[in-house]
Image 1 (cartoon, rainbow over the protein chains, first blue to last red):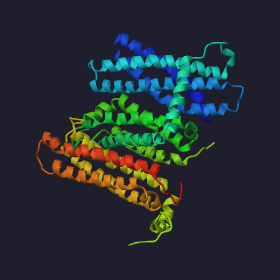
Image 2 (image 1 turned 180 degrees about the vertical axis):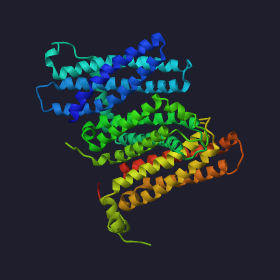
Image 3 (image 1 turned 120 degrees about the vertical axis):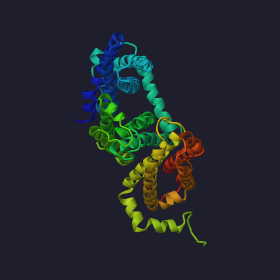
Length: 320
Length: 170
């Protein structure tokens, strides 16, 4: 198995998943069914996570196709452009979904008014995502199946817009000024502190350090951590778009993405199961449940590993 | 003491650079030390930042008094930074010591730590004062500490992009 293989293996899931999750979400809104709503939000979060390796490995797939000159280069560029837009909206949907799940677990059974705006945000982003996913799938199919391309059909305007966005971002990060890259690096470190600082302190408390602190109010720090995560996903993708071929074949980078995926999956599990609500009731001096301690320990270990591997990325030149 | 040097770089830096410890740092554990330096940063600035933000009212329902305990990770983080930072400096003395940005970073670190120590005295020094009092007492220093730590991170990150002399390129 290699990176193009991973791309082909995973790439249908976010597309089909976006439509299924959107369908479920609309049904949940129409029937006011909380359980279906929760399932669709989890689905959005899961495919948003899954789409990260799909987008990243796409560059390796494009690189592999350079050896087959009969395939259209412009078809690859169109697909990459559409993919960036679809991916961005899917991540946005995923973030709003996590937020919705968080509200859902906080307010438990009662019908909350605060959830209304996040539902609206999920719905709008998911509709945009589904549309963009259709374009992405279509332009992707055109790469390998010239026989289905309609002759003289106008190229997708959306895909062209996405391709332009990629070139614009790459120019901004690499060539616009020698200070853009250092500035993005600085932001990436600030995001790291926001994320690791808050998640770390909460995890240490759950493990039993600083026991006088109640867990529930301490959890109010987590939005700061999520903001740090969002900063780092955006700045991280700016690095990647700036130098995709440096990163995509970089062994440390691949390992880092894998570790982030595992950390993300654990996060989704923590918030979707009753574990989160149980931990939040732990008051000053009380012990957290054993499973919560396991999650806390794994999150500390994973984020330490992620920071360390990240620091090693400059060392990991092309493995292929 | 006046020293005659033929180059712009003082001989003293070269003496360090040719020493065993410096060669060892460059040779092998350099990236490991950088990793530790990043983790120490998260500990020191993360804990300081959480305390500062709480004193500024974010998040409001978190009790302030037990946050005094955050000084443990703050000091652990600080000493990790001192040790790992010194090792990095021993590895590349010319690169850092000929860069004005490096001295800016040192000044900002001192300012940041002084503010954290003063903040502890003012906010946690007297037992039994109300949270509102703690917040009003700590407000200015909380803002200052956030500003100084942001400055430390920015100037620290810029060290990789602003140096003029390096004897042993990466």
